[in-house]
Picture 1 (cartoon, one colour):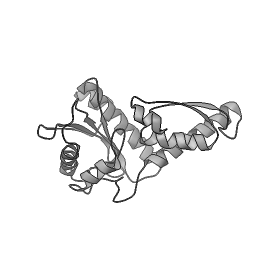
Picture 2 (tube, helix red, strand yellow; picture 1 turned 120 degrees about the vertical axis):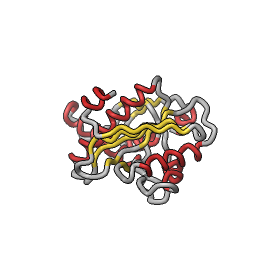
Picture 3 (cartoon, rainbow, N blue to C red; picture 1 turned 180 degrees about the vertical axis):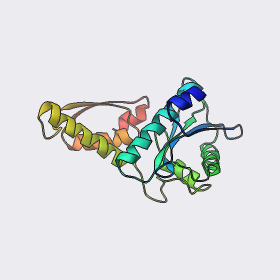
Picture 4 (cartoon, one colour; picture 1 turned 30 degrees about the horizontal axis):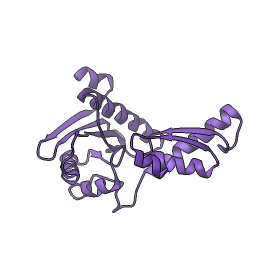
Length: 207
């Protein structure tokens, strides 16, 4: 474990287990030199605990570089909640996660990510002020993230295909969550032909 932390140049790695709420969470703080670590909270099933740890560390490191490149006064962090096979009470789970974030005293600020919703962040915000991206503050990052992906695709099409739009191009999207759905809407509006997939048939139907 210490070798993993050293190789990633990670600041700290935090674990929280709460039997009553089924919370099994990991928060990785990569760097706080520029400010408190900022990064979303993933709520996913993982093949193993090690996979969850690796995901948290990898994403926290990426957030450090993203914040620095964008001149944002934050460091990089990330949280993952290991999704139980049968969740009993989602509100209870996210309230426990919020208390976990609060225990870190502002060194880490959480937000929505894969599997987490604005409503979940509303619950987190009930017990900690170190969170963003809720219905209360109206800061849903998903449309902005989708815009970033869309802009990157436009730049790639211009560089590789000498095109100034994505109209008529066939685009495949794997995963129609918060960001994937917003990206699909932008691509559809631009005239792209979409092939979409998700493990949740309701998300495919909505698209």
